[in-house]
Image (cartoon, rainbow, N blue to C red):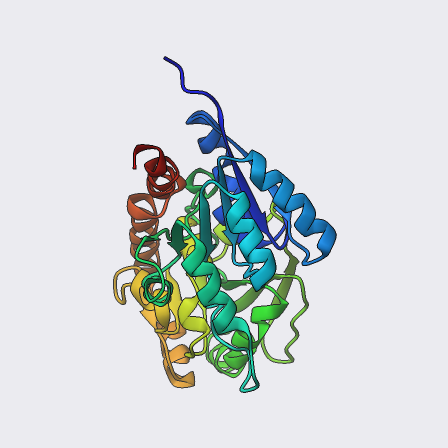
Length: 330
């Protein structure tokens, strides 16, 4: 007997948000292949959007909330309207943004308690959710590995560092700009490519600013030499799920990263890249790779293999499908 088509509704802050693309939209084809019709609604925190979400939730077999922590009244209504309610997070949304009073921890606790399952992007996030719900699955941010094709035989006359991000994470790149500029004074072939929604300038380091687009990001990454992922170490960054590192590795690039959170685990120092904490460590790491093309090639290949073995959509989808269908057999 053919199973009746089921439906899953994803709710997020916007369809164009990176977390929505990587943790929802990219799975729509796989969901349809397994009998789940997927749809998305934007929660802009207005009464009108909440009415539309509640109406759609009543018709869906499952509802997945991406990162949005509803208030007490709306959260109760959404719980009542949903047959199966799942919360997905790829950031430390329970961490207050400042030392001032914040409702974030309380809202996080309330939504986690109400959900049937929680999908957490890393072990740090999973531990936070397990305090309030014992049905927590680790669902790492994963990528469409087929989109990324490493480029061999790159020009040797320049070394291109690449960073991909947005205005919200710009501060992590500017933190290490002095290190990049210092490395450039000693390695004249060094360049920086910034793929983002802002323009970065330097009087010392040649910078190529590439406006981010889904259509061009793959080529802009693949034609670089080394991926960089600087990050501060705090309660917020420990919740990051390493998307840019995965993109670098899928593109066949070695990665230099701050040894923080999931980045520390993704980048195996000496295997898929190097760790750098201080300014001098960043300079040293850049010099090491800039002067060793064989190491660049071997680390890039190891990173690509790591992505293929554990961070593809197909692998992560097994957990997603299991939780969606587990309720039917409970």
